[in-house]
Amino acid sequence: MEAADQPQGTPKFLGFVNYIRRFIPNTAGLSALLTDRLKDHDCFWWGEKQQAAFDQLKIALTSSPVLRISDPNRPYEVVTDASDIAIGAVLLQDFGDGLQPVAYESRKLQGAEKNYTVHDKEMLAIVHAFKTWRCYLTGADVTVRTDHKSLQYLRAQPNLNPRQIRWLDFLESNFHYTITYKRGANNIADALTRPTVHTRNYYWPNMADDVRKYVSSCTICQIMKSSHQRAAGLLQPLDPPERPWQHVTMDYVTGLPADPSGNDAILVVVDRLTKMAHFIACQQTITAEQTAQLFIANVIRLHGLPSAIISDRDPKFTSNFWRHLWDQFGTKLQFSSAYHPQTDGQTERVNQTMEQLIRTTCTDPSTWEKSLPLLEFAYNNATSATTNHSPFFLNYGQDPVVPSTPNID
Image (cartoon, rainbow, N blue to C red; front, side, top):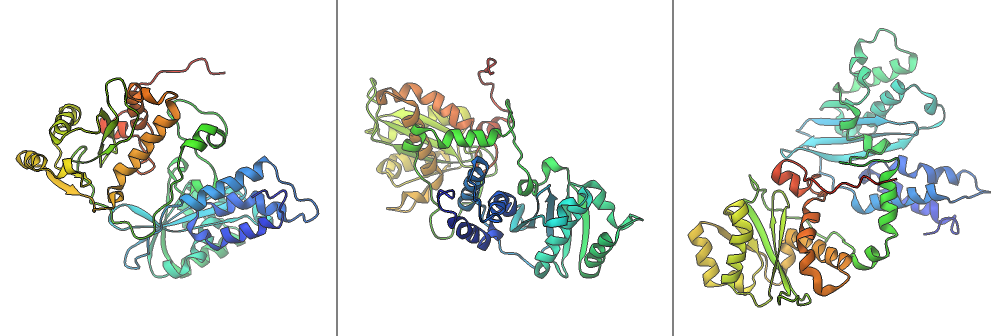
């Protein structure tokens, strides 16, 4: 969509975004630059900032977290934040597996609201959240978390202006709530109103945008990397293990060019808890006995015996030798559904990532085995979208030492 050439397309796109704004964090902040351009009908300008906002909205539309259905018998938590252009809030509940989002809300500051003090903007975010989610919060126990410290003493403040008195009267007469302070760096609603960048070694202003632009303009990445779409239907996740390498998944990647050693396949083993993986070069004609030797040398030697192994129904994994071996070790074998290997989604996803790494880094396809150790390290050192940590960190409790790059201008 080139909005500079199609000014009528922008209202349609924003209308679609507004229709599903409950499912997207920071809708108001992301769309502010686009809605402001619609006010001037005679001069519609589309620049880099508008394109960046448009790209961020597209990313949000395809990657927003799944919302949970609210439980009226559980207490609610409302996390709010405000910036110079927008206010935002997240409605959360703890369903026994940590706080989960029930709804998002955000909107632009209107007219005189932009001139409010920081205190009033933060309070406005709370009031707006309670008005929006009144159907959820009336009669419920609510904890409000804000990164503006003085709001936790709101009831005790002796001097309130008329606007603050109206807001406080609305809250006190309709809801049972407490306000607590949460530092901004740890405030989930900060993502609704301002960007936060977490890095280990480097930072520069707008780094996340620069990285995103670089990746989106990388020809090799666009050609080699596949598109990932969520499958329809409800997910049925397995119960999480209690310790690293207690449950592992394994599969083969086959059809690779043969290297000088004759290897044309990779055995992929993934820990279900930390997502750490081992990429083991092998031959496609490998037997169950040889697979067991590789597993012992590369997995058991480093991490001990797993309690369960999840795999597809490859003949090697269903052979009598394989079943008897793990029965002697006391390891349970679990198999994905026949004709549907995607049941073992974790290994399938790691396989895709590893194949992309090989395609994008190995200019000579026959040299893939030489790159495999570094590709494994790169995968294990990358932050997982599932855990928000790298597999290396979750497995060892620290980040690895990597080569420094001191000559950065």
